[in-house]
Amino acid sequence: MGNRLLRLDRSGLVLLYIFLRTLQESGAGHIRYSVPEETDKGFFVGNISKDLGLEPWELAERGVRIISRDRMQLFALNPRSGSLITAGRLDREELCETLSSCFLNIEILVEDTLKIYGVEVEIMDVNDNAPSFQEAEIEIKVSEHAPPGSRFPLPSARDPDVGMNSLQSYRLNPNSYFSLHMRDGTGGAKNPELVLEGSLDREKEAAHRLLLTAFDGGDPIQQGAVAIRVVVLDVNDHVPKFTQSVYRVSIPENLSSGTRVLMVNATDPDEGINGEVVYSFQNMESKTSEIFQLDSQTGEVLIRGSLDFEKYRFYEIEIQGQDGGGLSTTAKMLITVVDVNDNAPEITITSSTNSVLESSPPGTVIALLNVQDQDSGENGQVSCFLPNSLPFKLEKTYGNYYKLITTRMLDREQVHSYNITLIATDQGFPPLSTETHISLNVADDNDNPPTFADSSYSVYIPENNARGASFFSVMAIDLDSSENSQITYSLVEDTLQGEPLSSYISINSDTGTLYALRSFDYEQFRDLQLWVTAQDSGKPPLSSNVSVSIFVLDQNDNTPEILYPTIPTDGSTGVELAPRSAEPGYLVTKVVA
Picture (cartoon, rainbow, N blue to C red):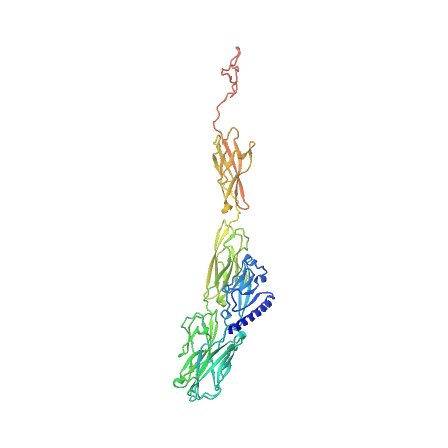
């Protein structure tokens, strides 16, 4: 029956949640949602795609994701519906403990624009906790001579719910001797007290059994009870008295277990057991009992667990001193926890790239990072910087987020990769630091054309060379990498004696080796000039030209030939006639070779 009513209570809260969420979404500014606790995994929280101005399918395409630390397990994104959903069961009491309002802040990153949006989700309470007492039964000792109106402190119940679902009232079972009174406590709390209404007689009734019940205001109402056994004692006419009504102490959060915090002391002038004071904590929360312990005989308060300033900064503890006769008094102990610089800053790389094009303009985003320190004050103030003179800088964006961006264009030919060290240092004393490293490769851009070693080349080749033989090689170098440095060689088209140059000379496109396709003849031409082009494979390709001058060297490859007089074709000897009167020096004939 109780579970069915609890489900009805949750369904009512769901309707309330939908109404409140509609009111919140109608406003401008921050993205705010509400969701009841104890809902199942996948419960709808809000239409995040609509509030970001996106279509549902754009969540995955644009890399929308939750980046908040320690909250990723609580919420998730549904890429189909474009909604923010719960990733598991939400327990408001576990998440926010004693806070009256429970707000969770998460950040959502749109990857392609590197924009961060803050989302605030209120976890609404449901009545899933009944009031409870730390002990199932307590014993109170009362003198039989205690006057009517005497008051005796009772343990307070604890209910981690908030609002009307929290602790609202107490009730004491009807009896003839005692009534219930509420005493104002710290923070507006109401602490129950047992009030004696009539005189006791130990000889008639040595003990009384009572039942104190605590109720919350949920629907349905839940309750918890503690049994009270009142033991009637003989006369004890002095109440213990503490040396101070309030004990104040400040302690650093790094105290080790077993360290003494302070010592309380109460005195009682009675003799014997009536003057012996026993100390105990009253109305202590379970978490506090895990941190401190009290020596019941000496009043020494010791550290039992670990202090953490970041979780609890102040403790208010009630200490009771009770003598052997059952009379008691209380004092307060106010403990202030002082922050110690015990948390180093944390650097979280939210998004980063491992490669950037060397032609990228200044301001190109390399990484998005978050810097946090769990300490407070100066101990939690963090500065983040780059220690080296690198072409990068940090630019603050949203909250504790920074962008690592370039300050100028990079040059892969000078530096092909960077190992960027990021250091975060707090302002504590001594300061604590954390460093992380980002490796960045500079991707090549085709910004270097091939270059030849010389501006021009001269080549000497003897005539009558062998056809198809190589006679020279050119080589160009490209400072780029990969396909941007792969060079192809070619000849610039030209003609020689009316024929294409390619019919005389060829070139190996991979090696730049020149080949003679013909046997050159010095008597036909003595030199020629050609241009070699070296082109890389980049997009767009870059190229350069070089001039190659080829000189043909003469060889003794021709015998003399008599052109005149003409030799007879019949094989006879040629005859030249001269007159008988020819004088010395007369020209008989002329030989031309």
